[in-house]
Amino acid sequence: MWRGRKLSSSGNRFLGVLRSSCWGTQAEGARLTSSAENQFSWTPQSKPWVFSDYRIMWFKSYRMTFACLNRMKIYRYPWTRLYSTSQSTVDSSEIKTFLALAHRWWDEQGVYALLHSMNDLRVPFIRDNLLKTVAQHQPGKPLSGIKILDVGCGGGLLTEPLGRLGASVIGIDPVAENIKTAQHHKSFDPVLDKRIEYRACSLEEIVEETAETFDAVVASEVVEHVIDLETFIQCCCQVLKPGGSLFITTINKTQLSYALGIVFSEQITGIVPKGTHTWEKFVSPEKLESILESNGLSVQTVAGMLYNPFSGYWHWSENTSLNYAAHAVKSTEQEHPVPEFVFKGETEELRHKDSTNPGVQEELKK
Image 1 (cartoon, rainbow, N blue to C red):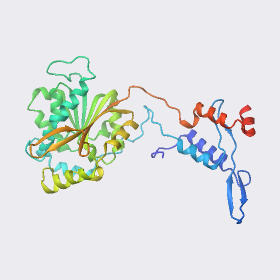
Image 2: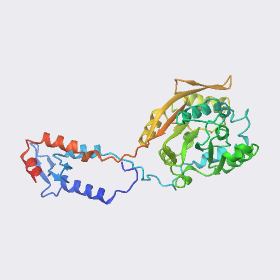
Image 3: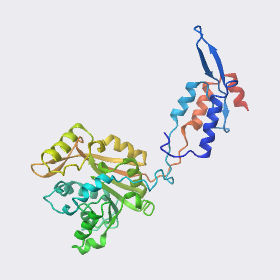
């Protein structure tokens, strides 16, 4: 419930109050009763507690106590880091897989052919959504002035097209050999050499130094490889500027994705290297959207992507049962919510419901 975080001193005091007020001692806080069958049971007795003039809580029964506890929510404040940057989302077993293929990124007919072909969809998808936020853009360099972080950039297959559109791009990848391949390929184009920077690191390693730095974060074919999706999304949100965009392409977790994405693609045809994917790490659009929303990101678009192995091309689809793309925008407002159990409105409602209770009336008069 508390996601591993320590309770504050006020939180500990609050729980202490709950224990003392709801359970009390055997002498004062509970009454021993006997039924016709001589079966004993404990009936918790509770007293009203006044926290302030407008924040009033009282519990009339065991059920009321736990109903209140169940309604408590965890609120994430913009200035609070919920995850330690030392906690890595990188799966060491995945590193070995991609390390063995690091020299094959730019073979358009090789093991990464599907990713080369996917650029026909994902590059315009990123470009067009970013242009909605730009009042004016330069011809030939529509993304000029926009800072993008490409997470899990591999050999730079998506990083380079974004750089050619004028964006300033930082590509990061935990596999050092991938970064070497990306840097080598970038060196052939002097223009890209100025616009693109590569770093061999994980996202968690640069969160603090790049907080609210980027206009967009791209994680294309990445989230199905991380070991802690919630931490990964949290870090993506932290490096985004308010109003910034997060772009994700990934694979849905369905029976069809297992049959086609793993059995057919990896084990039968070999168009994807065997062992590249783990079905348990696939994520549904619904679950992804829930995680995004809980981290202050508003989902704008979710679109299905289908690959035709005979033509070698991708196309958009309303069907998201296999691959899909998502675009979310970070909120520009910093909310300071108050936990539900101290809402004044609820206090007034409880005041009205218990207006006939003499004990409560006496406590409210104090």
